[in-house]
Length: 564
Image (tube, rainbow, N blue to C red; front, side, top):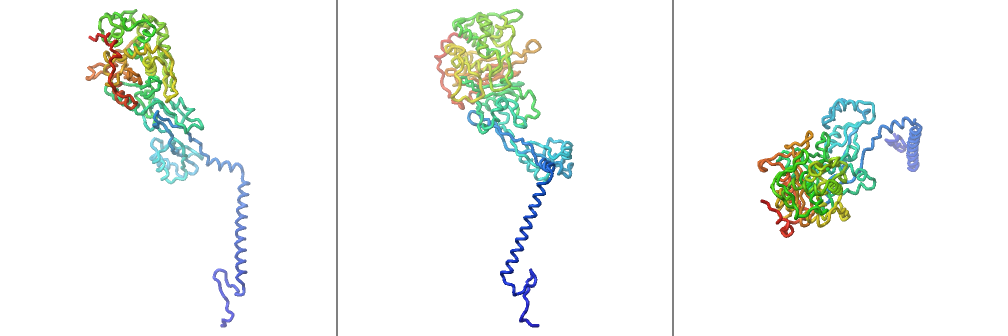
């Protein structure tokens, strides 16, 4: 065989004559590549036209399979007066499914039941077996639950990102804050009252600042809970209010609830005793009777009344709980909490003037407050002579604790009535409406301090804070009369009395006497100590420092009291 003209072989394209130039070979390969590219382009164009000419119904069906309801919501944070977070939105996920893609609904329902407690397996199986393309499985999953669902590897399950309302402090301030429904709509408390503001477009990044102070709120709740437990009370309420602005620094109602989970919470827990509950608050009302008489010139500290024996009016008898059985001066009547002396003072004031005065303090109409849970006062439709006498010491009229705190604040702050508020006022607070003269207000501060140092409120006296106040004990109405064993026991305190800053109120519903209280369950025994403890715990937080008392402020009135 001759190798002079041997052929050259290429394994990829067969034999090639060695006479072909490299340029010719490259041109051939380029042409083949261009043809392949053009073919693919034409194929894509044909497919695009095919899809474009498909039926509109088919397109709508495909679109329906990927539509997921929009359930996200945006809502402003709620903070306390110091910027502490009270309510905020938290990113979360909700689970949905496309039953058309599920192969074994029964098996999947069983797996989901294990991951998501509270769901019914039979209901899950029914949902997952439907012919629909979208069904909700559960809203607001925890991160762990989401991870466990993802671990199932089921392509028919998907998540929708949304937001959940979170209350970092749990039960604390639950009645003030309220709560929202599953779609983020306010249902109670400030969440409901300010629902439009909190969800207003363009303002959701702006927090709503409340007047509450979380530190004071905790101290008040802690002391009330301890007192409830010690005295086996069925409920409690408390307030701390700035007497000069009307700002509510703390508000507690017990029993309470966790706004993070209101499922199964009953009406008793949701009921706000501090604003919606109305009660006969007993001798705390004597403060208003004395202010009315002093401001209108009906009586002076030098006047007094005979409290030797009980008063009889119609079928009623008015007695004193701590009878002195003698003539009492006005300061003695107040300090010793004499019903007999106060009722006679009220008769000199007169029913019409008494009614007008209480109306001017907002005690005969619901409180103006940023909550819908506000109770309406209860009082006689016909204001008879006996009504004038009993209302003078807090029987026959029922108001809410927030109304009482607001009214008492106006008695000690120079005579200005400020509407109670749950919003932080800052420097823009209203100066209020004058209801008594500054001179009368000074006299009331003297009397309230004496009721603590010489009278029934001694257990509220927090050393160094010059506390003034008034006890309140009333029997609960029952069957057309009163139940002597079921008491509403309260104490209204104010401090410091030489320059009033804060009012502190505590109420226990049906407390029981203990060995430590010698079996007594009145306001002076069970509620006054709560006020004392709250003041001692919170005054330093609020910038009120203890100091020695100027005895000269009360000396003249103190000398008018014979505490034999």
